[in-house]
Length: 390
Image 1 (tube, rainbow, N blue to C red):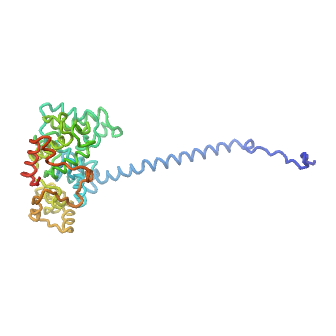
Image 2: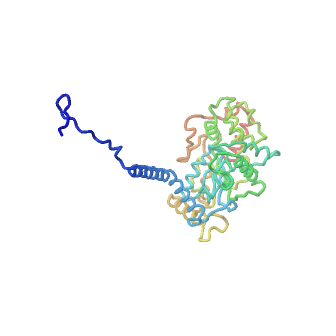
Image 3: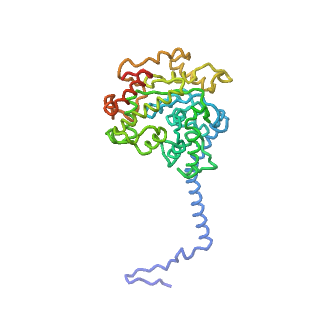
């Protein structure tokens, strides 16, 4: 049969069957199965990419911190070698990094050795509360410290590992975390004065920075301006009021300069009561700090006879300091304690505080105009005790 022609004389093609209508039922099943396999494969891939690094990190931490395979694990009550106190802005972050470079396992603002690499010690300001006498209404101070989360300022996990079976680490704050915070604060606040600290250290050191530079760094870090009547962030003020309730922080008319001048004075004066040694950060190399902390003492395979220093740490620190040209005898570091020869403070290479790099200068006259007695107290502590020139 001849196919019909179109109006223009062209043959018209025969109708083509719709392929979608001709598909067999099993084709739809194969397509759905393929789509499902693709979806599952993508979900597995995404999960692996997201969860894999976390699982790997936790596994790495377990091997190095908790298994005991690499180094003996430490519990809360096990002794550490050194706790270095230093007010914020005194260069504690840099000191931590320099000690780690020597092979010493110290952490900044943490003594939780189950989750943090701090089995040799801690460099911290928050642990300074261990040396502070609790106020008469201690419970009130504890409630203030733990009434809300204070990120980057204070948390119970800075002192002890969290009870993960009790408080969920997936939430920032909860009733459980508040209760845990209160428990830890009661234990550690003033514990050095009571001689009942859960975590003990063989040596306690105080890191000092020139008061005027330190105060300026604190003002820049915690305040919008250095003007009068400008107080620090409310969380900072609340912590100061809880730790030093005898000082009327909120009533200070000299603003942040007055607040942090008082804080520098109160912190260092209290810490002096519990430390065996102090050093000026501007002129004390990390090997000298390691020496004061006992990491350069002679060690054998059983460790140190009079210290809790981990013998392999001592070997690494001694080798690194020898490579840098430092001796291992403590007597060789006596010259490092000489006071500055002028009012200017030389910064040890790499210890210049980056928060206040050229942004603010605080002068003694400025403090004296706010409170003459406060200025005299700072001068007395800085010059008579720490041998600075002001």
